[in-house]
Amino acid sequence: MSNISVIGAGYVGLSTAACFAELGHNITLIEIDPEKLTALKNGLMPISEPGLNEMWQRNKQEDRINVTNNHMDGLLGAEFAFIAVGTPAASNGKPDLKWVRLAAKNIAEAASGPMVIVIKSTVPIGTAEIIDRIVSYNDRNGHSLPVVSNPEFLREGAAIYDFMHPSRVVIGSSSQEAIDVVSKLYKPLDSPIITCDNRTAEMSKYACNAFLATRISFMNEIALLCDEYSVDIVKVAKIMGLDPRFGSGYLNAGLGWGGSCLPKDLKGLIHMAKSRGFPARLLRAVQQINQQQVYIVIRKLHWLLGNLEGKTIGILGLAFKPNSDDVREARSLLIISLLENEGCRIKAYDPDPTAMQNAGKLKIDVTYCANAYEVAKDSDAIVLVTEWEEFKELDMPAMASMMNQPIIVDGRNLYDPDEMIQAGFLYEGIGRCSQRTQETRIGIVQ
Ligand code: UGA
Image 1 (cartoon, rainbow, N blue to C red):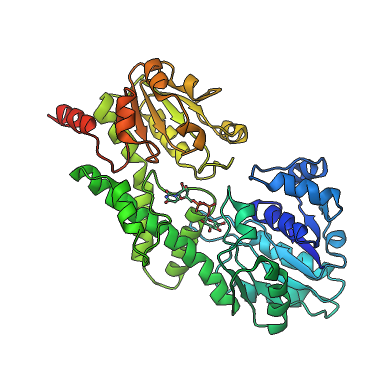
Image 2: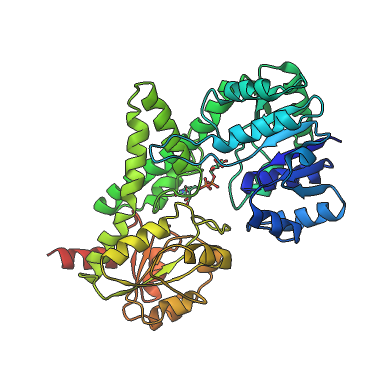
């Protein structure tokens, strides 16, 4: 079993730490944020992630996890140092490497022997070489400190499952010895291990996230056409997904992609392209489609309600996706701000209390509700933004009967349009067709 230090207690760092501990390794997590550190020291998990807390507490009790803010202590005796710090995008999209650079410097200064430095953070192509130079400059003892690029492909909300059941593990380095020892760490996971150079590993991460974003934006564009031509995008996606050349993932049309990764990484890749004088036309179009997608909610509400001034709109779901408390770049926030501009009153509920708290910290004028029924009560329309399972189980006739006007814009195509109409709703999905809505729309347009 190895001694592994993980720097950064975000989604990736915490999941990596917990899962490697679960595989039997001794983990030291290094986090400098006092709030996160105190929470972890007091046995509290700073993020909601299914299965993470249980795994964390179990391994902590069995003494396989330690937490510190001191790099010297935290890296003492470490054989591996995983860098899992944030790389937020600057306003021009350029990923900020300040935390990655600092981690590299701290590792080099604290290294008490040979150690493999593993970059898990998503970093621009060529970063491993920069890290290598920072490490060589700051390592006064001449230890062997090879740099490995090991991008993470886990999804928030499924982080533990994805870490333990990866579709592939990518290990890039110029040191074969380093590749071999890092490969050994992942061997118990029984997944394909792709070894390559650092740049290939770095690019593969950006390419994957950009491709996922592209698929979704593609489907969202087709969904707009489906709306125009009375075609159901859900059926179209099913037909497409059965083609083994495509696969069925990431074909769900909706309000677009958000979160801390897809938007940031697409911006990062566009920035990289721009810095080499390359226009990245497709990537920009993918981004533009996503930016425009939320306006569809306002358009649909206008069709159905006319002027929105003074109307009460209920929002179901604040987190950027189900099973997550994360509201970073959440579509809910954009929609709320558009509705605020229209002069609406806004009520909202998310099944994850932390997601509501996270939204509550932002400057938005929202009445937070205890459940979906409270959102529905006296609302003029509901917008489903996050497809939580809980929203599937709602008593929809009861919801409809509580509203001023039984209107729902299903931003994630969670519901069956016919069932919603039977429940008494005027239903609008994204790229779906329902007879009643078609008639209403024609009525309004005329
Ligand atoms: C994404 C990638 O899926 C992970 O592989 C990657 O490791 C991670 O970014 C990262 O770079 O750290 P994540 O941000 O957790 O994971 O979220 P996703 O599950 O990919 O969803 C992203 C957004 O796309 C969400 O807003 C979701 O609602 C939306 N989405 C997803 C759609 O609109 N349609 C779909 O068919 C799928």
